[in-house]
Image (cartoon, rainbow, N blue to C red):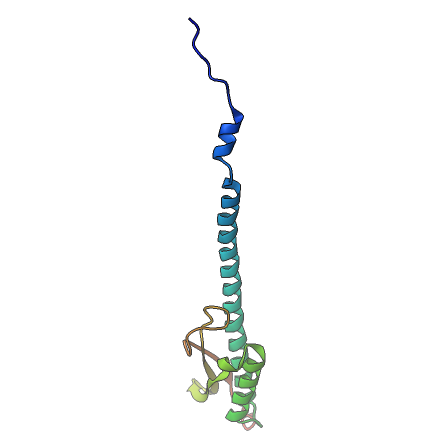
Length: 140
């Protein structure tokens, strides 16, 4: 007596995989989209941080000049931030002077939102600053 052999039916195996490529593509595609969106958001956060710090430094340099005032530095920092990332990021700017060793230093502090989703996020979370040594034309 010979053992019965089942004939290989290629259709039954392919039917069990039917539609799996579409499901895999959807899952992988959505995962890659999330990774891409996260990467873009991190890039935006770094851009906003660097822009605000650079604007604060420029405002501090402006305020530290001999023929300029603290208001000039604040105005410049506010204008640069508003043009670059928006008015919402330039709402809380303070300019102070302090003695650091032998030199007076101007400090521009900017409290800005943290961009969590696009440019939206909780207000006044970051405290970023820029400093510059005050120009003294009287000392030689």
